[in-house]
Length: 218
Image (cartoon, rainbow, N blue to C red; front, side, top):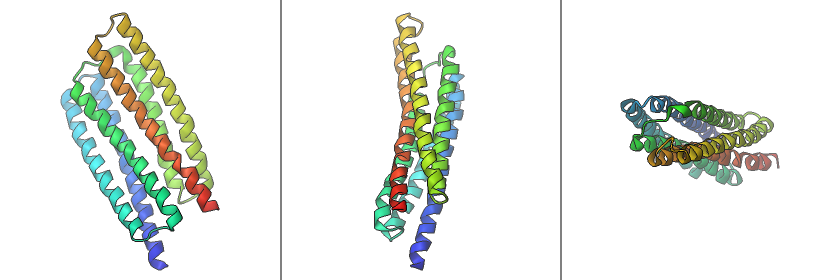
């Protein structure tokens, strides 16, 4: 029994390290976006390397968690949900990397009139992932508060969707009015969709929390 608790404690520590690393990846993406707004692609390239390294390190921690589950951490009914939660959180980091790499490849000049819209989008995504981070931390402290945070993530993701749709609508109008060219339209639209996917994946991760809470309370 002592070994089980020791393994659970190790998984809980890995879980916190994992979500911290995913959160840092989003921080790095936010900085990368500032370079993108200024068309500083040398700095964008460096941030892509940093984000890729963080994503790789997050994968390593997730694998360590999976090994502890295999060795018996947590009861069987809890393991599957914990593994799925870790994979879903990891997918947030994956999408940060995909977004960064897409910007790096596109090499388009960012349309200055969209900086405020993108800042709103990034702030909203940041709030969503911050709420997810707190939600996961609360899982091992207060199940009721973890559940509230999971619901908060869902509401925050809805706000991201609204901003995403607002930008996409504006992009189509700009292209139709010949204010931006077709390549800029396509690449900025793809960036918006990828950014929105970060919040979508955060919500997917938070959706696993009510299941874990219900099983624990049961």
